[in-house]
Amino acid sequence: MSILKKIINNEFYLFMNGKLIYKRWFNSGNSKVFDVMSYDKNTLVSLKNQDIKKQIMKKYRIGQIVPSSNITMETEIPAIFRSRETILPERFTFHSSRMRMKKVTKEELEAMDAMSLKCAQELSDAHVDVMGYACLVAIMSMGRGYHCVSEVNLHQETVANDFPTPIVTSAGALINGLKVLGAKQISIITPYMRPLTDMVVDYIENQGIKVKQSIALEIPDNLEVAAQNPMNLLEIYKQLDLTDVDVLVASACVQMPSLEAIDLIQAECGIPVTSAAVCTTYEMMKK
Figure 1: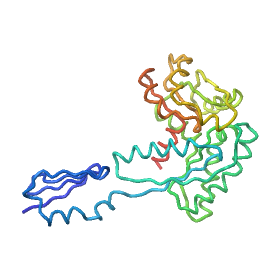
Figure 2: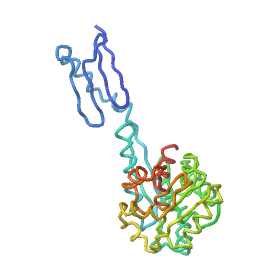
Figure 3: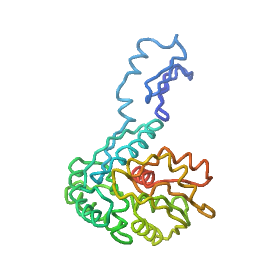
Figure 4: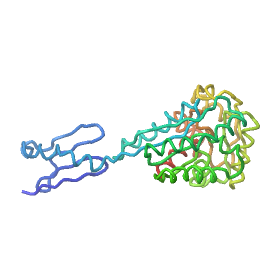
């Protein structure tokens, strides 16, 4: 008698003499017996071997450096990771450290950014596997290319704490994500005041990507930004002329919710649609 066990895409298969007799889906816990005659008590013991599940369900700790008033990054980023868990075996936990900020002004953003190093130290104490700095406009308002400076500084904090950790900034992640999508020209929607939106546009263009149009919703209160209905974006984006636009950034802010609307907008407009949160999650997964 020949017994063969296989794990494929988080599914367990048991073959006897070349014939599939049992299948188990680890994500749902469901299972199906295909050959009752071959499924005896000894086979059942084998299937309960916890080493099999431990082997494929490695856990990773995701660290987030977030503004104190940000309530979206701790919902949208985990939601994307949870979606990944339905098709791949790894599992994720989420851990945050906060920087004080209530109003989205250049002055508050600069003061908040100074707190990011302390946050990196705290998350490094938790031995997270990757850290994400979750405030795009804070980075971009500090000057062109500042995401590179910030990522180095934050990484050095983890090195000094004897636990070197990969760093992602939402600003750098958006730039990298747009380049992965092959974007030469984009349009963006932001919740920021017009002067901050113009800074974001300048920052992106300095990275070699043209911004054809930008919408500034001009919401100064960060909690109000988080309270926006993402489905409103289905109407807001129609104010943009998407002719010759390669990618639409439905939310160039990790605080403004957009996840529920992205696929719907993409289906309507026919071009790739992304957001700062989506790009940040993608960059974290790459690390």
